[in-house]
Image (tube, rainbow, N blue to C red; front, top):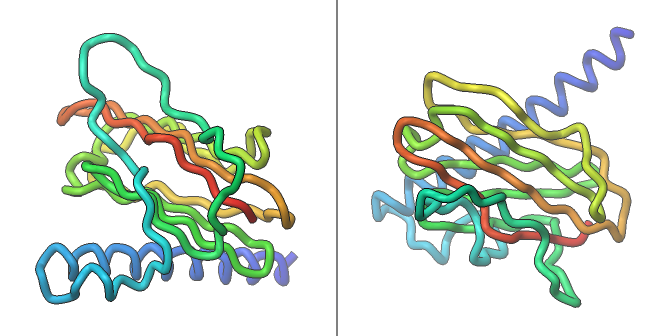
Length: 168
């Protein structure tokens, strides 16, 4: 049991390092001290989190209907209100959502993750009263399509992801 706990702690530490690196890169880019091209994320594509316009209900986006998907090795989906970071190494996939500004992350989060259309246990369904970076990790066999479906409803508005997907 102790071995499993140690392994769990190492995975959590690695996930936190990924998130800290993403936050540092975002802050440095926003502050102008690091050009956007020098971001540690190798592939940036449109996506991420956007403010939901209009009063009608809308479900978060699902995986796009593209024939080919970018690699999950290291990718960032950027939106006008935040970004979704995904990283995969040794069949371990880690994801995180960073809102810009961080106050947008206050509220009720409903995040589901999918591997080739099947829901995983890596999602989050909680309310946060302080800024938070939703994150998770899972084992991902090769050749699967991973995507995140997210929505946060809080005092600063409702935000949803736009379609995103990558191949493990």
